[in-house]
Length: 161
Image (cartoon, rainbow, N blue to C red; front, side):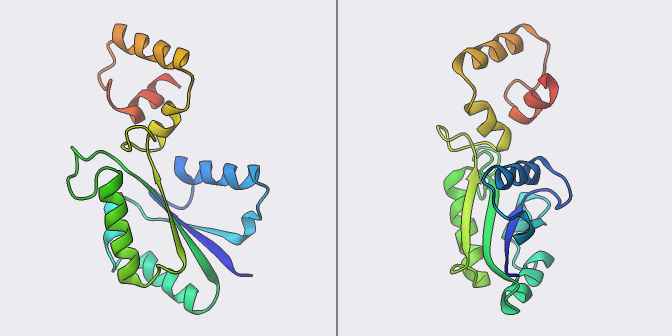
């Protein structure tokens, strides 16, 4: 059975990224047995052509075990990382590595971020999708709390959920 490989940040066992992807696969009633997850660890590993997962994927493509790749990666913030931060930098660097590895005919990319700012990560996407009333409630809570990481969406979700 030919499979689809999904490459994502974190590890392949259980992360927020692959758990959300598994729920999406289930919701769309797709065959989850045809999907194999590759946890790439930190974002910078995506941009290392020698990263071990790429060798495994290349072999699987050559053996016709995998025929499609989906790269799911956070945009993060350009002010934190001039090279890979932000949507455009992430997209450019990822397209370059995909071409260098020869995966361009087999690949698609999804960059996770707040769609309005084109920065952030999974938690930013989640927070961007909630109703304005709930956003205001969270902002009011953060304003009157002693919560220290008011601009960090990951910290906000981990603390308030």
